[in-house]
Length: 223
Image (cartoon, rainbow, N blue to C red; front, side, top):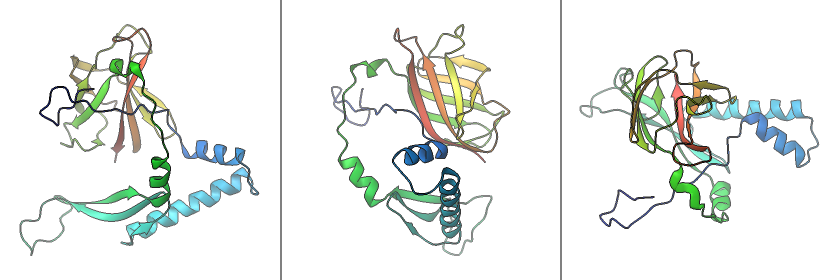
């Protein structure tokens, strides 16, 4: 696809197509198939305990190093001077996450396969939430939002096409209220019933291909 970050009009960049989403239950199922000396409930309980302890330790201010990732606290916001103190109205403590050694090694072993059909895939670049004023992934149920990207149109008469919010348990909530639609921008209302948690936004369309194509925007969160 086009690369807008370079002056050369012929430069292109790659977009990775996801193979799907994996929940914690999916990971446990896969791990059990590989062989385990513990039962599924025991494995689930251990993993839940491990993640609870790790997130507690990061919340306490410790840096975390695991084969999957490295996590530490960071603070977002502007401090007027060196005497200014943390103000929850202006500042926010957020996790800073980088890949761990094992994940880096696994990625080095990946051999990409070019999909010539990627030109027809919707590209979701940025979502702006009008209530929170955020374009960094924070979304507000019931808020108006603006999605920017490419190939964002779909056939509204087809029920399986459109915008869908997918939660961590793979439950889908379709966007019903669309105010404006163009290939590069969609104005719509975020469904009011979204619960607190993490979401993926999917745009499913056959407008640019005879096959269903799905564009994905990850790391969205209702706080």
